[in-house]
Image (cartoon, rainbow, N blue to C red):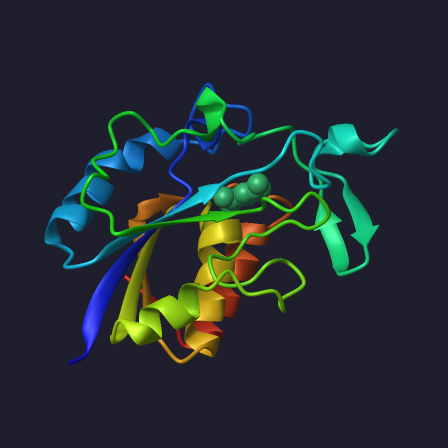
Length: 199
Ligand code: VGL
Ligand code: ZN
């Protein structure tokens, strides 16, 4: 039987106000996400989970500042402030997120040399996290996404989800974006064109 799952992307302290890479209004979505969790038969969370000195941190690139870009072997990479370091409070889920019913937590970005925006593939668009296989084995064919940030981890997860053949929607009022150089409008357009339902 076709099953639905909710995928909550990176609702962690460092992406909320006061955090290292705060997304404007990131904490405002928690009540809406909690309602979606209550209504969802299967709940999966992702957790951005970087080792100290991760290659996506500007601090790892002498002379570079956060939000500049650098050429990596797998393509252009935006550099970020140090964030979501493994085991730190910033990497914890928002304290008001009611996630105890979650059946799976996918950690991503744990390899020092490569970043991972998507819940499905690392930023080389080749190295899988295992999520697609997990969903298929469990008979889950429809996914709804929410969380942070709309124009990075949510969008890349949604694009990979449709490309992997899942019926995919993004619940926009349970998302907030970073919007770096017009990235929010650009990624909304890419999601729409790829067949992601924006609701
Ligand atoms: C994210 C930038 C760096 C996200 C994660 O969750 O959208 N953005 N790491
Ligand atoms: Zn990250």
